[in-house]
Length: 127
Image (cartoon, rainbow, N blue to C red; front, side, top):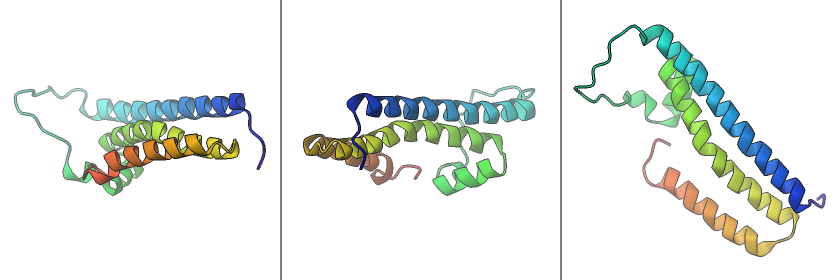
């Protein structure tokens, strides 16, 4: 394994975060544009709250909807990408600490990753 410096790992993490935010923003922008083209002329009714349809409350439904270029599915996918960005950063940090042979930080970062994944997956959320 190549010896990585702290600076190189920090730059990769920064690029990872930047790319995640840009990709998320692009997906959301495209989805929002599709949504406005289709529903922009309709008046909003704020008297009754209407949540997302059931097919947009799980990962499979969101991906299927986004693949079919449905606006709400694309927006949801962009938000999921935005949520996944810091999780990917923590996962990469474990690899970076392994490359530096820093076991203590690997353990702490692994605990943080477990907590993040449990909060997303273990609490009965959309995944």
